[in-house]
Image (tube, rainbow, N blue to C red; front, side, top):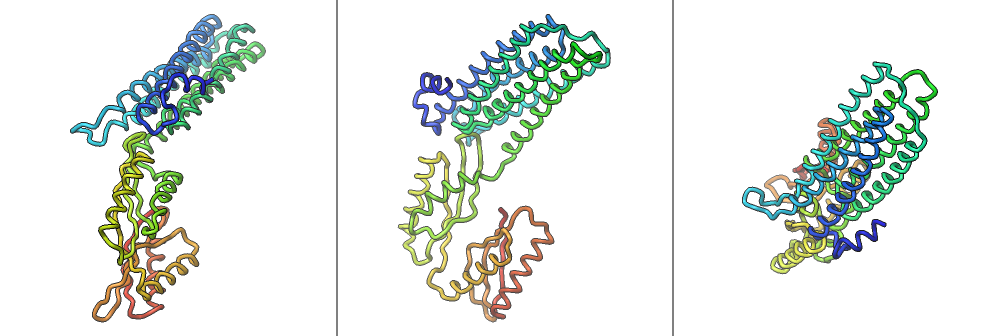
Length: 388
């Protein structure tokens, strides 16, 4: 059904890199979320009041907060597409991430309030909630609706790579579990003396808080900045390395200013004998191609390397084998040599993992330096450190 709605409601639906198309996907998901969650809220509120069940009322309020989250998502989709201005030259795309953070805080707050109510009911030892088969069936139908909501939110989030829709999808899945716990409490509560309703309310509340914290962590990571995905790195390299003049790449950095708003830089290795005018034209063309195909504003830096110097070739082969034999997640680039009065400076960048401790880093650098000097005592290693 969601594919039918996408086809009917979104123009040029397959052009998911387009900002307006992306906004339409979020709007569609948001409108469906508001409608479905409000219907569920009203149904569960009525059921909860009739049964005097704290767990059902907790579930109802959870659906109400989901509606509020969908509304925030709609506003964020609109605001994030505002054009860049003097104060925000990189656009307003991160508003969507901020909106996700606000949603996560709402979820945590609602969960904490419901946890307090559930604990009070458990301690007060109130009468068990009355059981009604028809109302349990209605809750079962709400589970089916939430499963559909999970399905379409997951589909839309994958289609446009949306953090807020992804969070909504898994929130729907947790709602399925919480409503299931509510049904269990209504059934078991008729056969035990203690307040199963209060106990299940606590479990429901903890699940809500857990999802809120999980969403907060995920969104915070995006706002702080994370490494580009392996898929994106591969796409960029595939475009660049298809040109025979490009011998290699390194130092790729991607800055995320919101969905569809990325800036990046990369170093490309070219022969030091190449025509600089032609290489400059090639780099301009590659930057434009990456922007057209991946919607990334790319800046490419050119690194000339020696391809005819036999001594450099020998050192390159030696370093390659040396690093491979060490079986460490390490690589090198920008190898070059300069002649001094007494020594030959062997200069290169060594890329090591962030996970290396200072001791591991220093030991590995010393190991590489010693091995280079063993190759020829006139060599003086000059190593610059990169991280990956």
